[in-house]
Image (cartoon, rainbow, N blue to C red; front, top):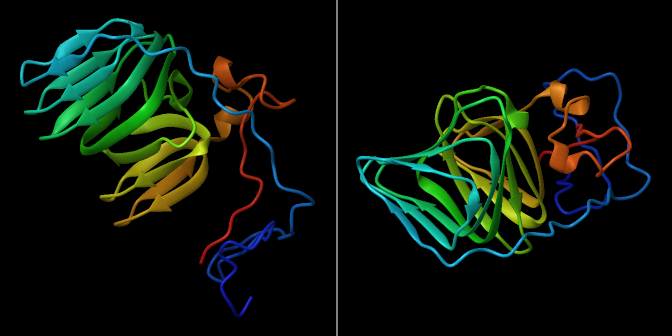
Length: 208
């Protein structure tokens, strides 16, 4: 199109520099189930330079600074808020998936998100309604972010490998999303009921 299609319903826009088999308009908007988050806990966690291992469970606020590393393993986590500053790191390791619910604030802009398994399906963030997520990633930013009623901002040259479902996605400073086709057949279990295929896929995109 000769004019911007931003905020135009159901329009697929193909970059003139890209190759594609076809382009078409969706028949109707996609519908995604909202996130039904478990209640957050009452404990606040503060992590500094020496880092900490966090067990699955329900917490209120997680704050990390001073280069501290927050280490997560498989299981379900619930946080009211997560905030990284001062180069802190939120890391996941292991083969068992981690599902992380965030009910209010999610700000990783002052730190790094790391998934050493290099498998996006092993690290799933479930964002509640109106959560505004800010993410700056490192070399191992492999994750799935699901929040159809949330807003996600990637910046600082972040290359996120996985998938994002959000009300709005804002890429800044050279940030990119690389869809992992393995998610189509091997979606995180928490998302397996969201579609008949049990996975996520790129249906269309537009650039403005």
